[in-house]
Length: 162
Image (cartoon, rainbow, N blue to C red):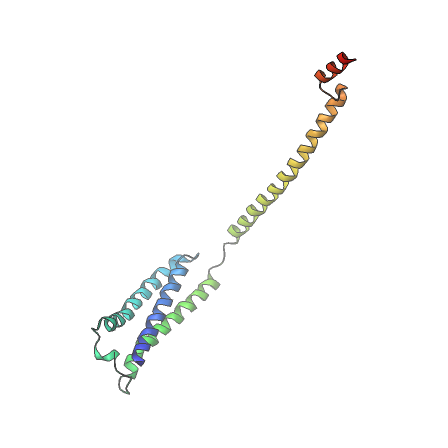
């Protein structure tokens, strides 16, 4: 039973390392993560094989026996290797984060573009409001300059009525 737990935890760590490499593959340092991803997938394949054999009934006796004094080191070595590999991946991630700087120019450009679009939206909104006010004032001034407040047909009808 203990060996089954060792095999499952080894597979879990291999899966976590492969998932982390896959996630980091889509970061800005993506090319650095191709080789660790391939190695993690190889470790995952190697660690899944005993579990698959156990599930199908083809397992040898080594995964069904308790850890004995002469087998303890040999059976736990894959778990230790995978644990060190996962630690290396996490360390590599933080090292890359410190060494590879952000592209400040690109980030600043994107911030400026977003700010400019926002300011343009606000200015257009105020321009449309002022434009509508200006049009109303312009119509009012034109009517006052023409000396009439009502359409000429209405004035003609009023004059005819008197």
